[in-house]
Length: 107
Image 1: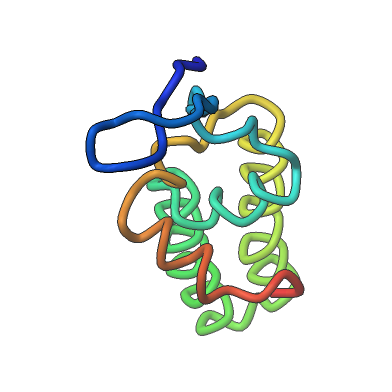
Image 2: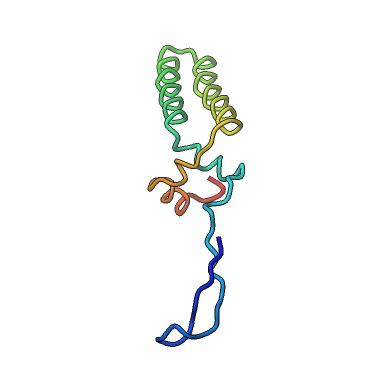
Protein backbone atom coordinates (compact mmCIF):
# COMPACT_ATOMS: atom_id res chain seq x y z
CA UNK A 1 0.00 0.00 0.00
CA UNK A 2 1.35 3.46 -0.87
CA UNK A 3 0.38 6.69 0.79
CA UNK A 4 1.73 10.18 0.29
CA UNK A 5 3.90 11.58 3.05
CA UNK A 6 5.41 14.98 3.60
CA UNK A 7 8.99 15.74 4.33
CA UNK A 8 10.44 19.08 5.04
CA UNK A 9 10.30 21.75 7.70
CA UNK A 10 8.61 21.84 11.06
CA UNK A 11 5.34 23.11 9.58
CA UNK A 12 5.04 20.00 7.38
CA UNK A 13 5.64 21.93 4.18
CA UNK A 14 7.87 20.33 1.63
CA UNK A 15 7.87 17.85 -1.17
CA UNK A 16 5.76 14.73 -1.18
CA UNK A 17 7.20 11.23 -1.48
CA UNK A 18 5.78 7.75 -1.33
CA UNK A 19 6.01 5.43 1.63
CA UNK A 20 5.71 1.79 0.62
CA UNK A 21 4.51 -0.80 3.07
CA UNK A 22 4.97 -4.46 2.40
CA UNK A 23 2.01 -6.79 2.72
CA UNK A 24 4.06 -9.33 4.69
CA UNK A 25 7.04 -11.58 4.33
CA UNK A 26 7.67 -13.14 0.92
CA UNK A 27 6.49 -16.66 0.17
CA UNK A 28 8.75 -19.42 1.46
CA UNK A 29 11.01 -21.20 -0.97
CA UNK A 30 12.30 -24.76 -0.55
CA UNK A 31 15.44 -23.59 1.22
CA UNK A 32 13.42 -21.71 3.85
CA UNK A 33 11.02 -24.62 4.25
CA UNK A 34 13.95 -26.98 4.78
CA UNK A 35 15.23 -24.71 7.53
CA UNK A 36 11.98 -24.11 9.39
CA UNK A 37 10.59 -27.65 9.13
CA UNK A 38 13.27 -28.70 11.60
CA UNK A 39 11.45 -26.98 14.48
CA UNK A 40 7.93 -28.16 13.60
CA UNK A 41 6.39 -30.35 16.34
CA UNK A 42 5.62 -33.19 13.89
CA UNK A 43 9.26 -33.37 12.79
CA UNK A 44 10.55 -33.20 16.36
CA UNK A 45 8.16 -35.93 17.55
CA UNK A 46 9.13 -38.16 14.62
CA UNK A 47 12.84 -37.74 15.30
CA UNK A 48 12.47 -38.42 19.02
CA UNK A 49 10.28 -41.51 18.52
CA UNK A 50 12.53 -42.91 15.79
CA UNK A 51 15.58 -42.31 17.98
CA UNK A 52 14.08 -44.14 20.96
CA UNK A 53 12.95 -47.16 18.93
CA UNK A 54 16.21 -47.24 16.97
CA UNK A 55 18.26 -47.18 20.17
CA UNK A 56 16.25 -50.08 21.57
CA UNK A 57 16.75 -52.08 18.35
CA UNK A 58 20.50 -51.51 18.47
CA UNK A 59 20.49 -52.54 22.13
CA UNK A 60 18.75 -55.75 21.17
CA UNK A 61 21.46 -56.33 18.52
CA UNK A 62 19.33 -55.74 15.43
CA UNK A 63 21.49 -53.12 13.71
CA UNK A 64 19.99 -53.26 10.19
CA UNK A 65 16.48 -52.74 11.52
CA UNK A 66 17.71 -50.12 13.99
CA UNK A 67 19.41 -48.24 11.17
CA UNK A 68 16.27 -48.36 9.01
CA UNK A 69 14.01 -47.20 11.86
CA UNK A 70 16.49 -44.46 12.76
CA UNK A 71 16.64 -43.00 9.24
CA UNK A 72 13.55 -43.82 7.18
CA UNK A 73 10.77 -42.23 9.29
CA UNK A 74 12.62 -38.92 9.48
CA UNK A 75 13.32 -38.85 5.74
CA UNK A 76 9.76 -39.78 4.80
CA UNK A 77 8.13 -37.31 7.21
CA UNK A 78 10.48 -34.53 6.08
CA UNK A 79 9.66 -35.17 2.42
CA UNK A 80 5.92 -35.17 3.17
CA UNK A 81 6.18 -32.00 5.25
CA UNK A 82 8.19 -30.09 2.65
CA UNK A 83 5.66 -30.93 -0.05
CA UNK A 84 2.47 -30.29 1.85
CA UNK A 85 2.92 -28.03 4.87
CA UNK A 86 3.25 -24.32 5.52
CA UNK A 87 5.92 -23.19 7.98
CA UNK A 88 5.01 -19.52 8.38
CA UNK A 89 4.08 -20.04 12.04
CA UNK A 90 7.55 -21.45 12.72
CA UNK A 91 9.21 -18.65 10.73
CA UNK A 92 7.28 -15.95 12.60
CA UNK A 93 7.96 -17.40 16.07
CA UNK A 94 10.75 -16.21 18.36
CA UNK A 95 12.56 -19.53 17.91
CA UNK A 96 12.19 -19.24 14.15
CA UNK A 97 13.79 -15.79 14.21
CA UNK A 98 16.65 -17.19 16.28
CA UNK A 99 17.02 -20.11 13.88
CA UNK A 100 17.09 -17.81 10.85
CA UNK A 101 19.84 -15.71 12.41
CA UNK A 102 22.03 -18.47 13.80
CA UNK A 103 21.76 -21.51 11.54
CA UNK A 104 24.12 -21.61 8.60
CA UNK A 105 22.72 -22.47 5.15
CA UNK A 106 24.81 -25.66 4.96
CA UNK A 107 23.44 -27.08 8.23
